[in-house]
Image (tube, rainbow, N blue to C red):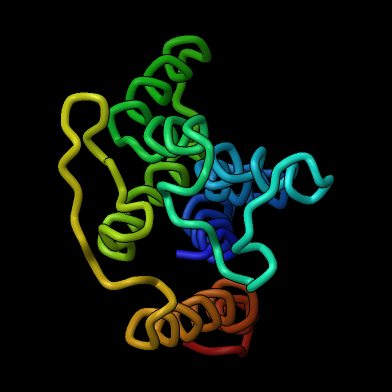
Length: 171
């Protein structure tokens, strides 16, 4: 799934209490991709990393990116790592940081929307390399419903729901 959709799902699912909660959830929703691909893309933006596929507008394949990107991808897309970090934060704060669950949602959504050929989600890493080869998120059968669902969710939570709460706005 694309990074913006991850952030938007995280925000609407776990950040509805306040704008601060929304942006924190949005941030946790994009964090797995930001921390695995962001460094490489940032270096590429400043001309410090390069790959010929950049000229064609294509993304480099997983075997064409530096090894650290693959390692960071494994770490940030593991439900086991997420659970350990979530638990550690819970212990430190003595209460859960629910906005962090947007990170877990990111992983769960990626599992069926990535294929073997391009960063399949290693959700059981480091215990197993098992992954699912799903339907790529850019395929119309995923992409179009994704956009429609996001539009529907945001209309509901930020427009329609407020109308229904107003006196005289609905039963």
